[in-house]
Each structure stands twice: as C-alpha cells, then as structure tokens.
Image 1 (cartoon, protein in one colour):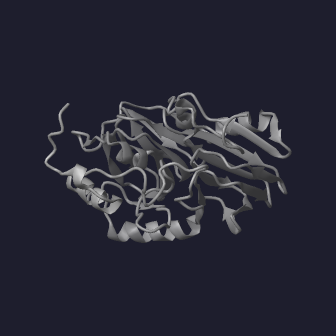
Image 2: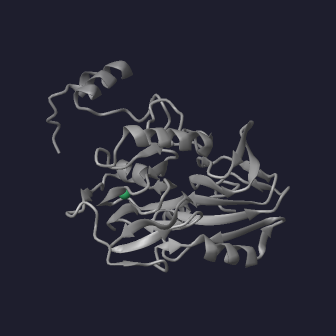
Length: 323
Ligand SMILES: [Fe+2]
C-alpha cells in the first residue's frame, strides 16, 4: 500500500523522535519496553498470606449487629491478598471470604457466572443453602458447590449463627470479562425439598471415610479429590496429615487457597511461618514451594485452579518446561 500516514515517520532521525511519533498513533515500541513481557519463570505478584478464623468470627458477629442481609448482598469478609492496590482477590484467579448468617435469618437468592463453593465451619441440619430449589443442609466440614448460573440463597433455621468460607473464581471472571449477576425474582428462592444427598454437597460424614480409606500419597499424607460434580475452573482436594507429618510441596503453577478443617500445624513459605488451626485460610499463589507440618492429626482442604492450568497446557510442578 502507499504511505498515507499523516505522521512524518520518514523524518525521524533518532529513536526518541520515532517514539514520540508512535505516541501520536497510540503504538508502543516493542524494542525498548520499560518492563519485559516475557521472562524465564513466573514473577511473583500475589504473596503467601494467612487469615485466622479467630479474628474473622468475632468481626462477623459484630457485623451481625451493624449489617443486615436486607441491606447487603452478603455479610462477608474478603481475604484480599495484602499487596498494593488489591482489595479483593486472594490469589490471581480466586477469592476466599468468610460469611455469617444469623439464626432465623435468610440471605436472598442470586446467581452469577462465577463458580462458587462453600466450606461450612459452623452450621447444622437446618442451616441451608438453597441451590436451584433444593435445600442443602450445611453441617460443619461439608463442601457445597454452586456452579456458574445456579441460583443460590441461604436460610438459617437453627438457633445459632452459621459460619462458612466461600471460594469463588470472581477475579478470573473480572479479568476475562464475562460477568453476569441477577437476583432471584422471589428474593429467597422457594425450596421444593430438603436434599441432604444433593450432588452439589460433599458431606463431611461421607468423604472423611473415603479420605481415611485412601492410600498414602506420601508418609503421613492422604488426599482425596472431591468430585464429580466439578467446577470448570478450580478443584477441591481434602488432605489428612497425621500428627508430626512434614510435607514438602514443590513450586507449581496453580494458584491455591488452603483451608484448615481440623487440627493444628505450621506452614513455612519464603521464610514466613503461619501457625494455623481450624477455620484458618491461607493464600498460596503460583510458584511458591512450601512445607506443611502438622502438630496434631489435621484435615485441610486445598482449592486450586489446576483444572484450568491443565486445560491450557500451563500446569508445571517443580520445574519449568516438561523434560
Ligand atoms: Fe453468590
């Protein structure tokens, strides 16, 4: 084609003047970038972090006096990774939040494109998440899924406050763009039936036996992948650590959130030491090697975006390119 640009590129006598002309056509040079776009190994952005249920519980109890579920979509606390400029994501693709619904209270039904799950810390047989018309009981240690576009609301018919941890892939959806959200036309979706055996529920009373009956992955370590059903972007693995087990995990590309269901122990990462107990949550961003040490028999659950990394061909563990 003929040169019809109104910018006199041919008159540029040096790179600064060429760069100035490029600014006029909203182009960036690729030969002197201020930061490289390609680099030999993952750069750290998010940091490993630890939050205590011992802090979240009284904070949510106080919020129960000050924030009504009629005023807020959810009464929750966001575990925002403590890096500059971030007020939401726990790791690059996932967010973790503590949530509380008071005795006798409901949280209205809504649906959204982000996939969600919850891990129950305190509940009861009459504390329900209503998923697509099924009242699913929330017992301590239960794991409940609410995939992309499923209506879900909460109805606490027990005498006590119910507490749980939500994990969602909202940061990934925000990054890529396909966010949709709407509330249910009935505010709280009417429940058709109580469904303790719903496929969206992994009851602690069931999976604990499967976990304990499984083979050891390493000395003192048993794991169980919870599924199907699955969520397309992130998975859930329950882990049993025998008392005094030390488990080293290599750096890997999946972003991870760890939640402690039972027990006590320590996680060491990058010279930091997290002393954890039941209900605590840890952010373990991509490409951090870490070590769990259980001081007593412990059960943890790991959420990770490994399914996404595998689908995209970017799953790596311990080394960069496959050998
Ligand atoms: Fe939701």
